[in-house]
Length: 352
Image 1: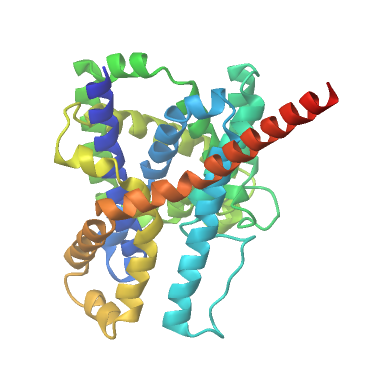
Image 2 (image 1 turned 120 degrees about the vertical axis):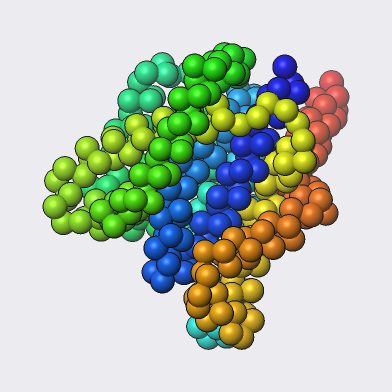
């Protein structure tokens, strides 16, 4: 069972991190290349919901054992990424134009901060009935598009929008998921859905393009279009259904066998943390790079740049460094706890 699980889920993680990297590269050039924008739109239909779902599925032990230090580790990752991107922006723009704001986030670090909130919220709600939590979380995701607040503040908007996928992943039964996803009656329709959605987006992108903001999670309904100011909640519910179906289709399409990409799927943390900073250095730090990509053949150039970034950031040394760093808060707490117990024992011994 372990081999099958790790094969499917690591393969999925690698495919999804490839979508993340390409999506961020494509975002720099989407206005000048319709095929680049269309492929990016298609990826946004499912790639973050799938990532969040898998994160929830493999956080069961952390949540059930109330390992809140893991949430602290994600908070530390968020601060590290903010500082790294600030340093890159200082290099590109100069110190006077670079901004550092730990309380607002619209770029890549949002996921680390949202993971912190996902874990803490689920630890608090772990004993509440599943139907109640799921209904409330979907309602919060729907309502977030109507609320007037700073949507980037502590990644609040994206946390609300994507939390239902994390919670569904947390509650999903891994063995049952494997049995269902392995059935041919799930695999074949799943592959047809992925292919069909891809072709549909390519052919009808002009009409679909305004809804790109809907699947990013951080925009209000008004930003999608004034006519959705009232009925935007229906759009969000529809987006939830589309994303959930495509997530299941994607997971069913992933191979259960371990291979080269499965090993790479174990290193997605380093790719996530480093890729955006490296991308900015390459595109904006190298003179003429952005103009060269914006010229002819933008789409294949975006793919080539994405492959280069993936190859560099997936080196094992970066993953080891980050996993060591992520373990620091837990080790500190363990030592403080051990020292506290020893002091308590000595104090009680002294009283006796």
